[in-house]
Amino acid sequence: MDQTEIKVKEGLGDIKFLSTIEDVIKILGEPTEDEAINEVDDSHHSRLLHYDHLGLSASFDEEENWTLTSIAISEEEYNINGVNLIGLNKSDFLQKIQALNLGECQEEAFNEEDYESTVMNFDDSHLTCWFENDELQEIQWSF
Image 1 (cartoon, rainbow, N blue to C red):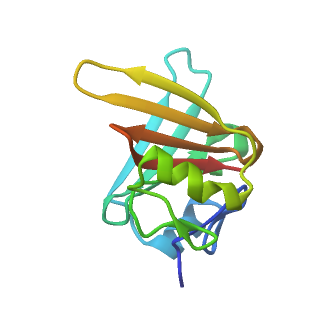
Image 2: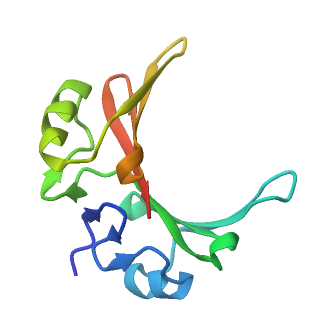
């Protein structure tokens, strides 16, 4: 099974949003780390399964009955419609995504002392891209 195809608003390969934790583990195997996230004010509870060897994290939220709500990837083999994006600079990224119809992009830049980061949000596609020093490092998307 090819689990490297990002399906905007749907999931990743055979993994679909709103799948159970057990269903995701059946497909990907046991995670490297299983992390509980609880907001300080107790308003939000999540569970993250990290798969370090896959460069993937899967998020499950209590408010969605502990089903899969978002996925984040950071390895070059992942693609959207056959287009690999991780590792690209912003200019090449913007060229390649034109054909993907992700919707309007909102860009926010942050300048730190030793690096520069940029976040690009595609609200229509529920997709966010993180760049550090002009290189795409991570893509996160949800349903």
